Amino acid sequence: MRIAIQVSELQYATDDGVLVLDNLSLGLPGDGFVFVVGPPSSGKTLLLELILREKTPTGGQILVLGRNMARLSPARARELRRRIGYMPEGSIVLDERSVQGNLEFKLRALGIRGPAAREHMARAVELAHLKGEEGTPGAKLDPFGRRKLVLALAICPEPAVLLCDDPFRGLAVAEQDELVGMLKVINGAGVAVLATTRDPELPARHGFPLRDRSPLLQYAVHLRPEVRG
Image (tube, rainbow, N blue to C red; front, side, top):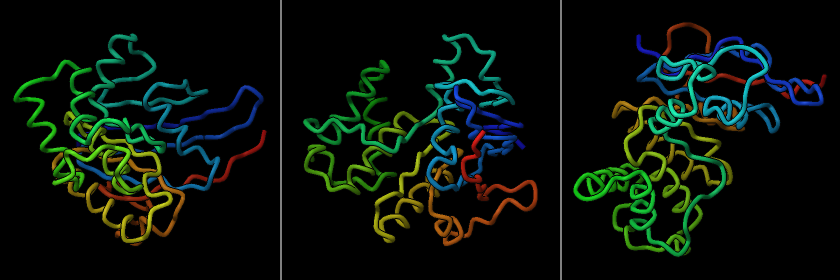
C-alpha cells in the first residue's frame, strides 16, 4: 500500500520543556482519510506544521510521499510542498478579489496560466461547492462560503495530499457534514486527506473508527492533552 504520510515515534518539546507530542505514530495511506482529534493545545496544528517542515521535531521521523522531510534541501522541500494542499484554520481569503480572482492569484504565483489554470479553477470550484459564486468578492461570502474558498485554494492546483487544520470549528452541524462530504469526494478523486478536529463526535458521526486495527484507509487518531514537563 502506498503511504502518503508516515509519522513514526514523533516527539516535540517546546524551548521551556513542555512535551506536546510524545511518541506519536500514524500512517496516512495514499488513498486514505485520517482524522486527528484532540482538545486545544494537544498538538493538532503543531503536527501539521511539523509535516510541512515549518517546525522541527525533537525526535522521530516524518516521511511525506516517501521523502524524509528532515533530510530534504530547502529547494527539494519547496518542490515537495507544492504537492501538499494546506487548509489553515485562519482565513487566507483576499477580500477585495472574487472567488475566481483568489484562485487566479494563487495560480499566477505558481506560474500556471491559460487553459491549465481554467481547468484547475473549474475543478476546485466544483469540489468546494462554489459553483455560481465565481464572481462573488471574498468579503461578500458568509463564514461557510469563506471556509469553502479556503478549501478551493488548498486543492488548486491538484495536490497529492490535503492537510486541513480544524476546518469544522465554528460551523453548524449541517455545514460540518457538508464539508466532510466534500473532503470525502476529494479523497475519492485520489487525494490523501488528513484533517484535525477538536470534536470527538464528528469522525464517529461519519463512520471513522478509532485506530484499532491496521491497515485502515479511514480512521481517527486521538491526541492526549498537553503534557507538562
